[in-house]
Amino acid sequence: KQEVTQIPAALSVPEGENLVLNCSFTDSAIYNLQWFRQDPGKGLTSLLLIQSSQREQTSGRLNASLDKSSGRSTLYIAASQPGDSATYLCAVSPYTGANSKLTFGKGITLSVRP
Amino acid sequence: GAGVSQSPSNKVTEKGKDVELRCDPISGHTALYWYRQSLGQGLEFLIYFQGNSAPDKSGLPSDRFSAERTGGSVSTLTIQRTQQEDSAVYLCASSLGAYRQTRYGYTFGSGTRLTVV
Image (cartoon, rainbow over all chains, first blue to last red; front, side):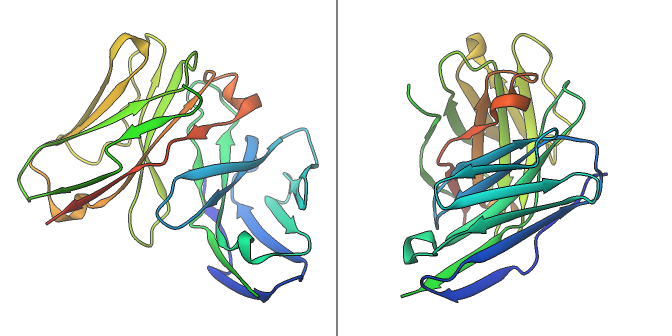
């Protein structure tokens, strides 16, 4: 059974700092990995999707990497801003396509202090 | 529509009552998923619809939970005889299809926050 772990559960950093959020998964037979952002009381917003054949994806100040063989992904946020404060979740999709339900980590709650 | 729409956004109900939660996926998305997010917990898969195929109900926590999808579009999640442990945010997501999802990912709605008192 796939398990996704995100440690630490919470992180507080000063504005302007570059930071890395970690995600690990137990079964390397994944088809893709997706990072989401969730603001308090809101749904999920997709940030980046990395296919299993890819090593990284970039969008603006965000860069996500994937090392499938070691079961790890990182989300790098450059020059953090207070508006980046949110919960960041990673989720993996299984290799089989019959039902691509995602397995989620519990998320990392990020607070960026002005 | 432009995104996945869920209604109501908030629902407070008395223990023992039935509730219906609605999800309107992105037009053309054949795959639809329901997830539940309880306080302090990760997202829990509930049910999956793909086109006209039989739904995957493997995540439904009890027989009080059911869901249907009419005309391959709008879906309704029904919880009968609600209990306090049903209090959670119920999220709906859609994608182009089980296979294409693996390329394009999911789009989530904003969720319905259910509180059972």
